[in-house]
Image 1 (tube, rainbow, N blue to C red):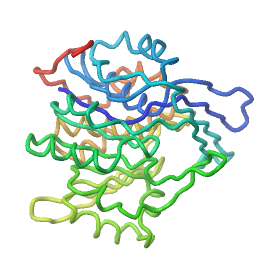
Image 2: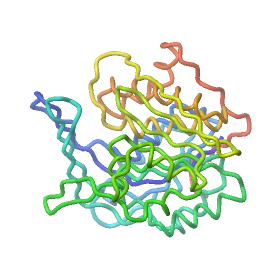
Image 3: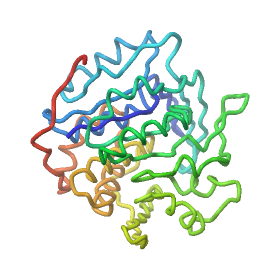
Amino acid sequence: MTITIIGHLCKDIVHLPGEKDVHEGSFGGIMFTLLTLANLMNERDCVQPVFGVGQADYETLMEQLKPYKNIDVSGIFKFKGPTNQVQLFYQKDAKTRIECSQNISAPIPFNRIKPYLDGDGVLINMISGSDITLDTLGYIRMETREQGIPIHFDFHSLTLGTDQEFKRFRRPITDWRRWCFMLNSIQMSEEESLGLSAERYDEKTLTNHLMPLMVETLLITRGKRGVTVIVQDIHKKLTQKDIAGVSFGDTVDTTGCGDVFGAAFLYQYIKSKDSFVAAEFANKTAALNATFKSTKELEGLRTNLEQLGITISKSAPNGKNTNGSR
């Protein structure tokens, strides 16, 4: 199995309510997606990340990824200037947070992405909201369509703007239909779905407008309350399933749960070809991530899932191991 992931890296500074210490400077953003897949997949499989990192952080990042034999690091490139920094201020209710982003990276150019569109699936996670341009998404669709490679698209920060104080705020996307067109699966939180259109469509109305855009699966995540899965079959019939949330202990930090969900979903979908099965697995994997303090704990993801009795599909026998340069 080979999966390509596209999205911005960032350095997270997490401020939790009631704690004086902060979790400083750890790599976040697409790192959650990358490490989730690397720890779910076997060494014979391959995850191909395509993103940039500030030149001052490049060696540190490479050292962190070195133990993973199933990560092809050749798509990671250096750029001048700092890596995108994100400060996350969680509020006392533990449900909301204030996010501030500085030094947002330039969009990843298509010529960086094109050599890696030859696998079993592509995951695009709009970590910053400017990870790729709409034109680049169009090129990716054209490259993967004839090969039948599924694209999973997480709207994430595409629905966020940035004010003069670097705070992120929700705002509608006028061309959201073009972003959604002809994608296998789309992921968004319920807040993102309600704020996506200028008309402020409710979920039912949004679904009725979105699914005719040749979308196969829509996933609306609801945090600890679970996820709603809407699947369209070849006859245009819609089937909806609400998957309840689960808990595996006290919630420590919800940072990256959506990223983990998307990675686990695509991994399981490629194995099962069933969006409902994949969403069940992703829902549990994201819930487990909420009990972790940082991406470091993702190293034990597979072991923890197995101990909880959660079945992880065996990897494809034709996976490739290409840790290194092309």
